[in-house]
Image 1 (cartoon, rainbow, N blue to C red):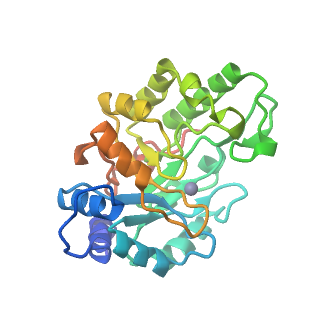
Image 2: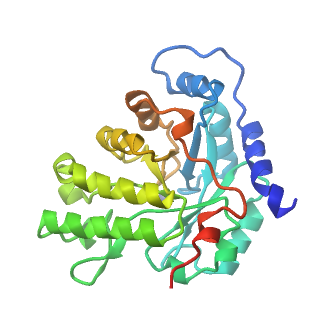
Image 3: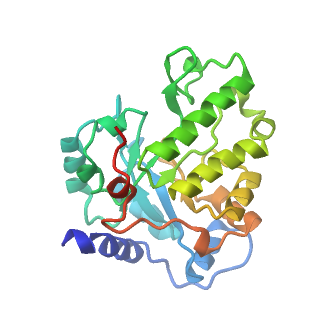
Length: 289
Ligand SMILES: [Zn+2]
């Protein structure tokens, strides 16, 4: 299979592998019926953010996809302190995963990843995504926002400004396709989400995503971003992807994503599609030195 035909062939394979039974869709809130309905309408029901974690096997993921009608993109975590840290690691991983009926995503971790891999090797993935949950904070410490013990927020407003700078910096400087776990706040301030994510702050993130052609994930696990954010992003021409970011064997059924499609009036035209070879962000933007 040549590089040029790799992407469409892969995607067609996904469609075939996860082709859903021809049952007529039932109306109502059953997620499987809703996904079948969307698929029949040409809406891409793809979860681009699945992990083979907690013992979940590829066969189990494919079976879940067949049962639910969800097509999957599977991603390993790549970066400092994660399972894949070198070009060789990427090549080995991709060799083991090609032709298996899933799209191949790269979760780029931390801010160091841009110095760890070559763009030619990264471009072998179908798409690349990252989040803004790992960075160096006001104390000069590397923090992971989902780990309570590492997070220090003495001043919420100052934290938001720091976070905003990190998100916009990633969108402007890192060659990613999708910004995932978007607008995530650490546990200590999560309850203030609506107050802290002011409209000007939402706009800074959305504008950066749009000007860089980076899609925004609608995350099923964290139920992020908020409907207000998604509506504003849609009005500004942002693209969206669905993602679960499963931390264990539970892949779920994209419930929050389906709710947001309905609530925010998303159509197929609002949704992300992986770029063909030659047009990937890592090939166009490369790594800034
Ligand atoms: Zn993830």
